[in-house]
Length: 97
Length: 464
Image 1 (cartoon, rainbow over the protein chains, first blue to last red):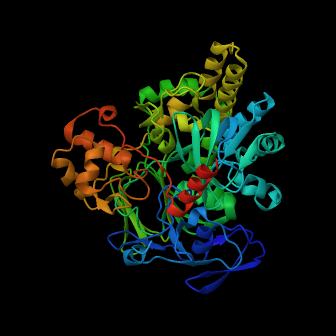
Image 2 (image 1 turned 135 degrees about the vertical axis):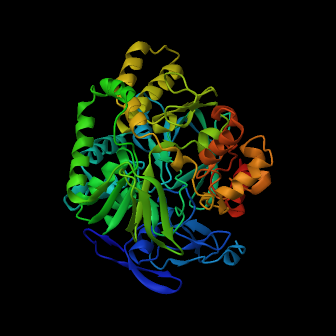
Image 3 (image 1 turned 120 degrees about the vertical axis):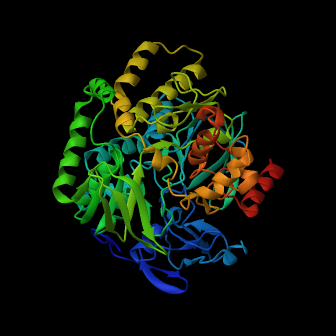
């Protein structure tokens, strides 16, 4: 499980699959997910689970779905109050993109 | 912002090379725009530096090299160069139009000159199990430290390279428990490496730093050297890894978090998609854009600087950014830039240690092409070595035809995570030299782009 050396005060709430989660403005979504113990966020075409790998926008294995239906890389997206993300757990979900 | 804004120089990437070029060019009187995909400048090496600087006492573990970027970031902030953060560049054309997306809308700017300073990425590491959740790159571990002071206790590190040792050292400094470190480099130096170590002695500080990191790691972790036949285990999640140790004994280490690394390579997405000429560097086992001394590519007016032109580190990136900016200023003023031999010497001097490091940390073959048939080669399409090998055996002429046969390289990452592997597999199969096999053809847009984003560009055109 990931932890922060020196946690900073959390001032906002984001929703991961509709579950509220305390965060801080500007936190990287991938950091939040990993600190919540969620290392699998996405599924490959063969259905195997994937999660953040490169943390710099290269591998595309941390794709999450935003409320408006767009898919974004969790390692390239920053938290803001009220943000809702959904973890695309299967390829079926993604065909709706 | 209206379509058709023009700048004397548009720089892509606000890492050390991009920031240095931005400072230099704006001092030289050019109108400069710098585009970066992150919210703040720094690149990967100085990631999050301005945010960390305000609470520096809370993050002492990142070390002096990281903080040396602060002066550069401050000088950049004070310069007149205009920064558009959170901007994703997805295409550059030969007539120097730059297309980007920012805040959900696409737009374009035109440039007198373009400098691509998009840096490096970690080499793909297609070993069995590398796609399992819980397995991340060492660069990712470092990014988490920089952006959130976040780390995992009990993590295992496997691989090699300067960034490998630096990050483990930073992990230890931050107080995270490291369960084991598994170094995959050969333990003894070859005679050739002793020769290469001679110029490296010109950079004794770097050598000593490496030795210091390794000593700390040896003292504080379960440290294995010369590990081979590494396989990562787990079904839905990583559970550990096994390897053969220096004594030939099979070792198994449990791990909930595993970080792997085999060096960095230039991130050539944008330079390849812009049709710049590249050459295969057999020393660094990666592609470099072809440039002149000043970084000008095969397309006039498009320059490359920093690790994106060949791996040489942050200090060399600063110099190459500055040098490209001087050339661009001199050309804008119609004057010649003197002292080419001095620049050449400086460039060599700043990278004197590189041939030694490249040789010492050359990725072993088993990390370039997996030993195990079931190891994933193309992550996006979930294709194994066996899948790709079967397609190659049908007689493909190169990586681009392979796409049609099995979809390798056609996923979202556009070959970033598999092109080097595919190239080596085709080379191993048919014996063609790697530079002839070539890289997957990269086409714009190099970032996923929605139709909605593109529509904004069409509106701009209509209003122009």
